[in-house]
Image 1: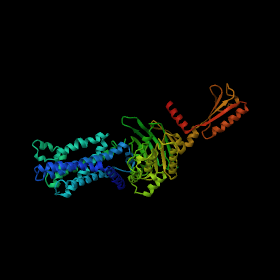
Image 2: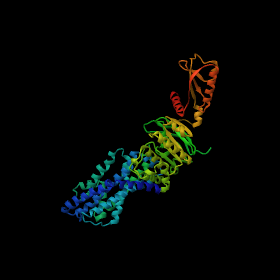
Image 3: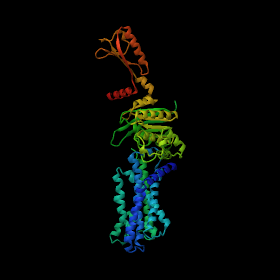
Image 4: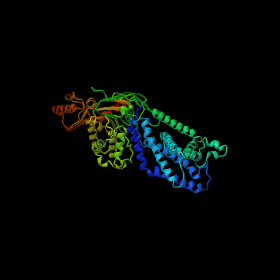
Length: 255
Length: 313
């Protein structure tokens, strides 16, 4: 398959430049929000909570909070990245360029994933000011964060193509991803839920993501790490396939 | 004759739940020419451009650019095609420099600041290179779009209504820029509402209406073939009938008998010569006249006439 690296790099640079141009909204704002969670739930309330699975409560919630920000921000960044050119009409340039699905994804999704990783690094750095924690499997954690960032950037890209209004653009992150992350074991272990809610909670795919990241941090999880990894890779593959079909058919891109 | 740089055969586009925007369009564009596509709103001009540039998915037909089938070798072909859209669509918060550097990279070209500087200077945008696009005037924004389209040095350039909303002075400035591009060997296809623009710049003209190409011809040939001269001669005394001395001229008498109206010629000076002969004939026949008003038909007259004929048919 032909891949034009210059085209992909041009899109990537432009998207990154857009992120830094709006640094307050795209970087500072989510970091501030997550820091408040650390202060309230980690330091203040967490100090009075029992450890979960041998992990102090303040440290226990870090993977969940990280996942909350990562999912919301990568999805929003990628969806906004492709929606805005559609909305303003500047997408004509992308569509008329010798650029295929691979370059487009490398540019838009790569930039959204990079922004997610930058956020994750800042959030983890910020957490050290409020909570004591150590990452048991740092390489696995880094790989898993990258995998989740790439997957949800792809998902956001689909969302940005599907949406035909700003309202629709915000629906999925606000009304689906955020509640599912909250209910996916960010602040508690699913194992501690009474039946049948422990089983019901596993119907929430985000629970597998939070569990997977928590395993990489502390070696404890609600579901086996292999299942979390498999599900995330499967989701990434599915999103890639959907985008390939969108480009082939031109759905919502070409008239 | 050289091979066409762009060849369109049987191009059809029917929008979902909409009208047929293009109806079996055949068109050849010659290398190095300026081709003006004229047509009323909704005629299919922008759809035609969109189909070539990858913005619109054709329902049927083939498009060949630089000898390559666009449906298969679209990457190679698109790298050599530029588009200036009708709308002022660009990231308004970007600087001019970043915007054109992005376009250069997007089309797979290595970053070439010297080339970007040359483009900006040629479009009188060099001193605005660090300005945000939103801070520029409408005319300058349009020039930024041209600069973006030129950043990858296209050989075939589409200009969709390039001077829409631009004041007269800037429009003439834009014409000079387009003429300079032609000098550099760029083939240009432009759509315009200003028929004066086509008359001024185009080598060939195509007239499109209802998704069908009604006519394609050399501008001069079209004016020669369809152009006419109209002369209105105001007489000193009314005439009841055409005198025998004027029988050989295509003239008619005006409503009140005080005007003699000539319609004829070929739009290339033949009519004016015949009007001169007509005035001599009037003098010889002792028919006095007080004024003479001559008007050669413009491309606009031809365009309006042609569309009117098709509508009547």
